[in-house]
Length: 264
Image (cartoon, rainbow, N blue to C red; front, side, top):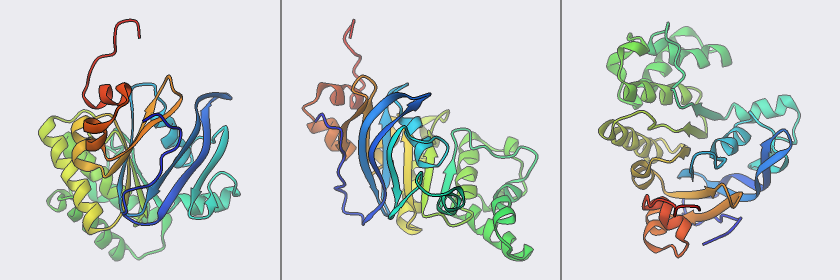
């Protein structure tokens, strides 16, 4: 399927964020054009593509780090980039982000890392902040490691701690940038299971930027596939169906890990 538009079809709920007629790139040079898709409340949504395809650029547009060249990022009825800075900050405060490295502060314990957003963004008493931070760490299975520094933990545990911190302020959407990057297959599978469990029990919506096929099949409900030469979306849907049923050779090649022909 070759298309510049991805339509929602998962049945998870109403759209929570919509990308409309997006052109994006750097210094006015578009690397993606005419991109349309929506993320539905409660789903685990994947943004896929090869290296240099622009998937991380779309993430930056969605979380307020990079202004699009053209188009809209709509959260509900609010256009993130058409609002004033103060209103944009209020919208973005409803998002949680975990970057590829986990971005934990190495000199802080896990508890201190998760407490930090609560300390800076709320006026809650110290006891309440401590309780909430411990609850978030318990959600990702790290309640026994509150006093540990990040360097004392495995890569997978650091990623889970990063998710706990991203959840500190009870966001409506969690954006994860390459969450399984650098993890061995067993650890990555455990992280995928954590994401699925949180989506199903806490009800948070996930947007995951990744190219890890194993995680794509086990963690996501629905995906879009971005292709560099097409400068946009070439497929949308259940990744398992795209792998097995797509009649687009580019889509089959991505999901089946088939090399491109020489000279392509």
